[in-house]
Length: 573
Image (cartoon, rainbow, N blue to C red; front, top):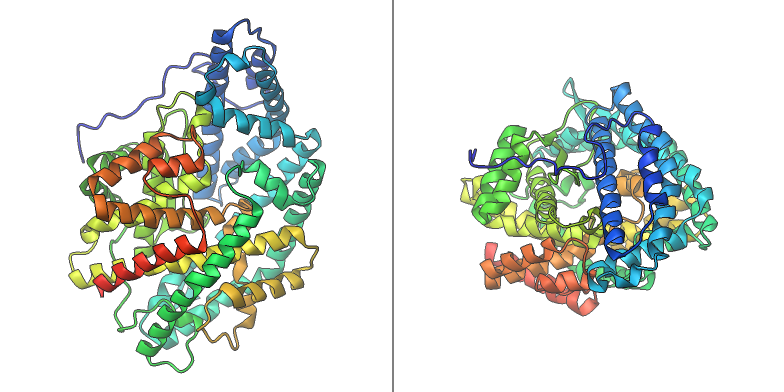
């Protein structure tokens, strides 16, 4: 541990009381009233008002963040769940009308045009879009939707199976799908699948309810469907729904054939006539699953070492989080599934949450979330909270680039050269293998919200999309129900709708970023950091350009990047 690290402290508040405890709406209502009623007599007043509003946003978002983090760490603790749901039911709905009033006050200010137009360009276009789609009738619907979304995590956290007399979380059980013993893999897969199918109808009903709520929100705001509403709500100024369809087509045309070739090679090496879903994760040479670490503490320390070798600043970010105990990494009973980095805008130090079980996938998750964390540190000194909240296409560029950049120093996880090669090969293959799944989930969502359908029709549509973008080598005979139900594993469909294609766009950007690193070394890392420092003060295209890459998902560009990955794979092999 680097003893010279300075632990960040929250900046001194200028508007919100340092002693504020948010246990009722009344504790914060006066702050909103102050902002709504305050006289603004000149440009300086306006900028001070904007900074006060930004400070309040940081305080409130951080308070809500801790409630969310703690609830996920232990879904069995009713008090933690109640604290989060108090925020969703009592605070968020009352904040929404004030946010709208403050947005109107800002854009209607006679001093607006005196502000630095370039500095506030991106922020103001988002404010204007928020005004455009705001409807007071949607406030209770948002509350209901946010409460329902959390049911997915609760349902999923209760899922477990028993193997050899031991109760295992679904994450830990999934590790056994890499066991060299095929009979064991099949046994475990069936148990996982059967357990998921037990909750199929429950999750179908939940999804139906969420779809209905979301469509109503969209219609209230004057949109034909929730897909079109979300393009506005997510601030997708830089591409359209038609561009997403082009992305789907480019992936089907350029990536699916490559992934199919990977799977055919695996099937041949395994010598299997019927290549099943439980054969997709095992090592083709019969080797045991990679075991890069044992326990969350070792994962933390090795990740710090890896990041320090890549660039000392990156290591300092993780070391700071370790010192502050802003990491919760290991899978355990009652912990909600998934992994995330949660920004904490007031302190400026993020929190990383995941469900590590000692796998190579966990290493990738850690460096991915570590990339998000570095991004959070690099943008922490931006003047306004809103400048730090980047669109996902940029946020995921930070994290997915780090997955590839950090490979340079994965020897900290593997002292065996062959295991290191296996890890790198798996990572590069997955960089391409993940793209069809991303395209499939996004294409599925477009259909979900633009087509009236039943739960059964939804499964049929998923099967159709899978036939276009899914694995074409697997023999699904006998596992048809599992295939039709595959989409229910994707948390984003339930909790963060339409936030998924960004991973695909950012994956292309990450491959380009890694190519720059191979060609230019430290200069590429400099560009990467400069891009992340921008936060959301520039457009997506401008941020990518600062990083030295293109925001592009044309078939030609997809092919160019895929060819590069294939070339790098040939060097490992």
